[in-house]
Length: 114
Length: 113
Image (cartoon, rainbow over all chains, first blue to last red; front, side, top):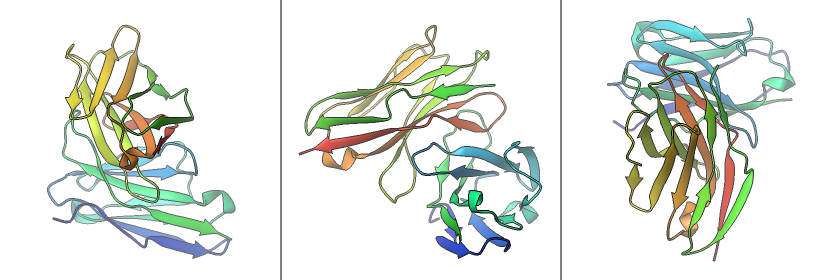
């Protein structure tokens, strides 16, 4: 297993366009998390899945954001009608179920909205 | 809601010396875990060390150790014999009962030769 993989690494889009990011977690991990990180800040929680079920969504996740994890494997995060304020690093992480496990993070997708 | 506070936005240390990064948190839970993550420039987050709240013994991983003060809700990271490769952002994180992890704003550590 090569860890958590995120694609693309970088995405530049025009305001108003839709974008979709993909995350492939560690195959043994049934939990998958999405975070957003802006420059000089810590990651902010967006949403997480246990298998294919989306169990929690942050209030940060407006209705322009949607995430899926079909079949409990990879996940996609879609942002519709992007705004300049959406520019950030989007991080995906996975972990086994259980409170004591740390997360394994991917390298992130850097989104720039112009 | 749990909050994690890192009051030192930036710190620096001379190579081979020791540095301590501070973290405080707020929670009403009794059973939780605390973590320190390292994020080198333009690289992914890496878990440095983990502490279980019900264990009084402070966690240690090689040159990295923590000072966990549960009553004070304090969780500091000590890096001994600092190396140039320790230069990174360091994030303190809290994970309670409900599964997702909350992070502090981070401390930018620079190790100087």
